Length: 339
Ligand SMILES: NC(=O)c1ccc[n+]([C@@H]2O[C@H](COP(=O)([O-])OP(=O)(O)OC[C@H]3O[C@@H](n4cnc5c(N)ncnc54)[C@H](OP(=O)(O)O)[C@@H]3O)[C@@H](O)[C@H]2O)c1
Image 1 (cartoon, rainbow, N blue to C red):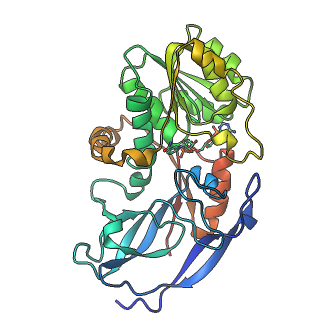
Image 2 (tube, helix red, strand yellow; image 1 turned 30 degrees about the horizontal axis):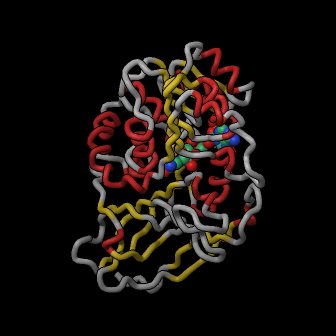
Image 3 (cartoon, helix red, strand yellow; image 1 turned 135 degrees about the vertical axis):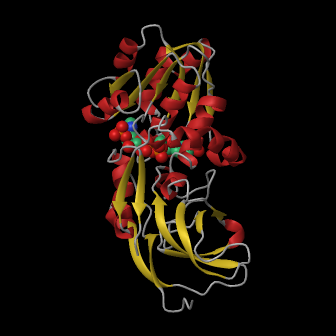
């Protein structure tokens, strides 16, 4: 197949946002797709992941992952179909997972993609429950803040991709009681009705600390922190001695223009002998096979319940990311591409 005539579209970072990004932060640009060279494949992307950490990559400065460059396309996890191949190992027609999202077509070295099985698994699950958000949830409750039999566990952003899986896995690994927090009445109802949490906090309806104290009068043993700020402060207050916190994410701070004042009670972490441990999922990609072995059967038999929020079209990806940061999603936020 000749690829010289293929036009692709990609989303570039137009400027670094200060505070909340807006549509002007992004550019939608048409490009001409190059021919794949030796050892390369041309992929037509079909699904793209939208993730909160993308906001942090819009800031300048080094972190565990380099910042996006102004004028360059964004990137992120994506699934696609091989439409041309100059690599012996990957045939045309294969479904692949890779990191060149935020564009419709990508030319990639075969060594940088994974061929995926889409006969038995829905392709988009590789971006969610069987992808990095699922693995993050698994690591949080098994390794970073391991849940023990009988624990009381609190999960924030619990209606989201990581949180909804973390709550269910915490229960499976022995938690006696799992409490989740989410924004709004509808989402917090979903925690108990859909995702199997025992109790839900609507953080928009009142103080997290007061609601948590009421729902866990004997305290909590493990906190899976996706939010930081007031949620972390409330958890530190409620944690029992020797309690554990998996510091998974701090979404309440991603658009902040000043350092967060909370948690104001960090000294309590010392007197309670708490463990607060950070997680970067890419440090643990070698655990994927073990995770998939655990989670794929649960997903297949329906005992791991997932939801997704699907937005169609590359041109709508920026508003999907802005929406994610404001809570527009339940479960995994995905872009479906049909170009
Ligand atoms: N450590 C790692 O390697 C790793 C890997 C993946 C993800 N993460 C982190 O895990 C967290 C969840 O990621 P995800 O991909 O599963 O996203 P998600 O939870 O599916 O989506 C983000 C959710 O965050 C909530 N949120 C936004 N602003 C908030 C605020 N100020 N206070 C409380 N909640 C807020 C919103 O839900 P509500 O409507 O409930 O507010 C929104 O739906 C993020 O912090 C992310 O950075 C970390």
